[in-house]
Length: 307
Image (cartoon, one colour):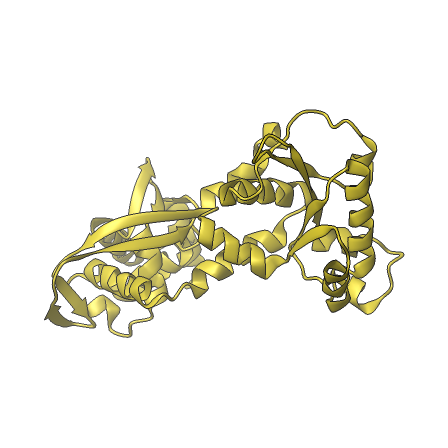
């Protein structure tokens, strides 16, 4: 039999995917894991006590009739793994303390992993949208050209987007090419071990250099949600044309640096802090909460006007 405290943890675990959950459906899921037939009155009573406790603590919030979603504090609490968490008088206060401490220590491993997971799932057009947003955010590649290109053959050779830089009145073109891991895996004719693993090889980069020449661009950016081989990097360093290679690790780093797909909240931390039941006093201070923008990664792909 699950007590109220264990039900709190179970509910928070189920809602931790960030989706909207129906109260009754969640009850049925928990009941199916513990027994057959209809939920007993006792289970229903303990479930609703746990559910409304979480809502009262601000760990989940109501979005419509009997539909709730986990809050940021709820997500933090679910990741804290404090053994006596539900014995605390105010677990939400502990959650704030836990998260702000992570922010100050600079631990963003979970944030990086979330972004990486989204990028690994991207198909070609999806990664193209993210890349254009990222390059525009850096302000180093000018503005994206949305007009038809003078030489349409360059598109056929793999130029996915073009940026224009005009620093001194002379327009300079920068070509962008997207190569996803999925693109490589779909090519059945590629049998090299590195290709089978989805890596971008020197031949891909050489073809991109040819496409840049057809475009009339001396600079280019090649992007992948996979990795490049060592030979690809060696080739880039040996040619006159300037080509920047951005693999998935670099994409994650740049997303964090330029806050693409990232939400930042500035909050004031109270002087009252609790660590696993023990209260300590500290001076109030402001902290920045950085979290992944799930709405951006889940909905931006449907904006066809931007592709």
